[in-house]
Length: 366
Image 1 (cartoon, helix red, strand yellow):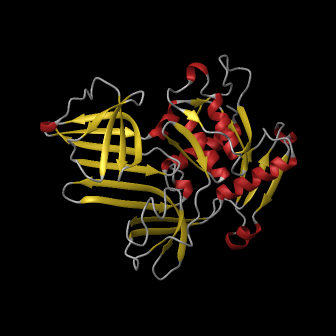
Image 2 (tube, one colour):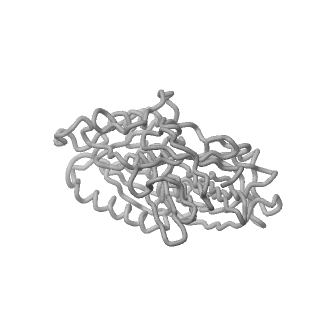
Image 3 (cartoon, rainbow, N blue to C red):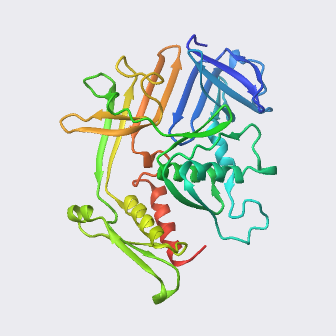
């Protein structure tokens, strides 16, 4: 129990059942364009009258009288001394549905993919609405009105996780998405690099890792419609990157494209995907210089001063709130690369698997 945090227990429909008082530790993780967590630890000797193993519950966490996070209980663990309840936050419901090739199906044989084009916000909301119709609707989830924000993008869906598709759209379109009080919406992330800074000198930078990785490709070939020698080939490179790193060739399947402007945009996107990366992972804490919720938020672009090198501008990818009776309230932020917010770091085995899948897709159309 804490004077800083209030934990409400709700049923699966979001109706409040009461306040959870007898808890010992709390951890809330909010993530940029990804699923956050709520973890509550309680002593077995002081358990309150909730059927954690037999009923479906939601937890809603408030901090200083303001909603912080909420979500469905996903797992419960207990031992002789303690019980731990773990929730996915509301973004987690996007993992419950797939983007179908024919959203109104079955049957699904009439199209290989469902294609969406337009502003990133329009694509995200249309894709979600089409895959939440009728019996596929998620109780309590709605979609905010479209304001056509973000860059123009194109995406295709074929039994892909809605969360994965939202992350791809947001990254391409320069947007941030969230589900708050059951409403899915997007916004343009705040650029606060001229207002918010983390450094050892300010006392709010705990640790960092910085590494540079060269490009995996600087010159690309896109293979269009046709077979064998009849396939259309569109090619080009990043001259600036070639000047520094040399010509590094790659190939991508693009048989779905039919206009030169579409090939040009696709090549630009692929060159950006293959480009060199400056990876930063910084762990920061709240201080009088910068406080979460007042000076910056999840998704804000801020500045991190790396000693004896330079300042790096990256986004706040994760904010972790921890409270227990011994240490009190602690708030830590992780700052880094947007592409790593959904596991897209080029150093992970998942990224390697994704690249392998893409290569196979160029040889065999699924």
